[in-house]
Image (cartoon, rainbow, N blue to C red; front, side):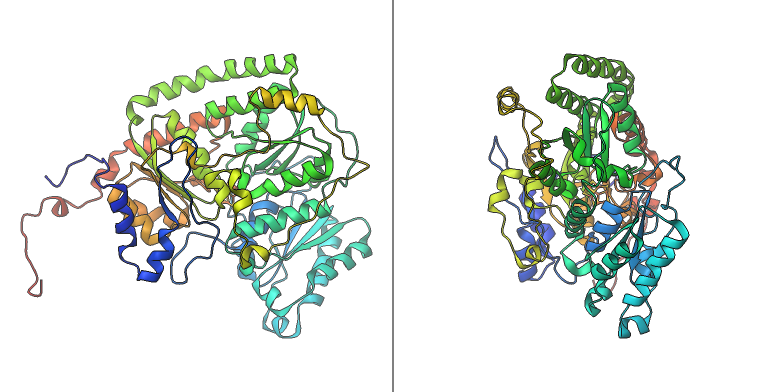
Length: 545
Ligand code: CFM
């Protein structure tokens, strides 16, 4: 019967890999083969994958550009910094509120998130240079808004014609005296993906803002939350939980953040890294320069949220905090478990595929696991080998021409402001009890044997994977949304959340369970095939067949 509903994987993983590569010319197939991995990890043995390399020309990648990673991802969510794009207007249009990073309006009225600032370069600016236009735009912003900071982003043409955006910014900063102006050489072509933009943004934020405000910050148990961008209100939910536990967030990089948070980040006592890919550079630099240790956390998934809260409490080691965290978990979990148990009979045993940028293809596997759903295939658009295989591979990463293109900041201990947060004995005691600093094990150890991991998945391979493995849900972005749904598989956007969310923390988990339950159990997908496709009453063949 053609209508068989069973969605079991009928193919062997090795055959799926072969099928994915079959259509490619031999040279392309050889290169792609290194980015498609059949997971055979047992214990600590993790297989190697090729990642963070150029997309092969002609392939329709899911990736974005370096400018997107710098301006859109890291710098976009801060409400009181004016982000000025130096380039043609198209680059601004696509950076204008298309990512769902939410913000509080703020009591000071300084919220520039709804604006779109661009120098709107024209042909003549490309020919004669755009520096004067850039200086005039910075002046205009200053006169109109008088913001704390103005940041300038280079787009591809700016790099090609060689406008000196850093000198223009420095001159304007000196001229104003009360407004921090600096620039990012984040031309779209600068790296192989948005990942290069993250690194460039991390460097400049660290060099130009972190450490600017030395005022003592009020509150107990001070942390930085790094790599949380408040998509769909995730950050609001995490803030609610942290506040309830009595933990003080000095800064969030960069969801719902302000200039002053970046400036004060060095006053925190622990950095908690949510998205390792986009922000690990800042975490390392904060430790080297100011002595703030960092740990990996994950607030996607109710159990992961509880685990992360316990990890923070264990670091501070204060019984009052440990008790309070336990009380919060005990108070929040029953409501989460009630919904989880309610959906479980309908979601148990279903399968998911997750292909998002960096961290979420890993983090969201926890949420699916809570619903009894298995992630059969996953991958990152632009993450590096350490995000797949864990930070242990860092010393063995190949430095190629593309990564050499991105500056590595030389950061040193700040003699005046460096402060060890714990004594060496205290750190050792924590480590002896199983506490791990500066560690991220990556996605592979959490995936089952036989699962398929694909780096920089493309349109063709996405459709092929769905066709062969028939998952119950596919998670990716807007570019994939409708091509996947046309194949009769529900598709959930995990970049923008399809206007939904939050999905982080306890309340977020409840939202996610309910939404995924609706999606994977909707009857609508079984109507995707027209009746005559299912059981043709008349069949015919063409003469040439
Ligand atoms: Fe980090 Fe992100 Fe992600 Fe990312 Fe992104 Fe994003 Fe993403 Mo889209 S910072 S790597 S560059 S978790 S915008 S909030 S959803 S690709 S998986």
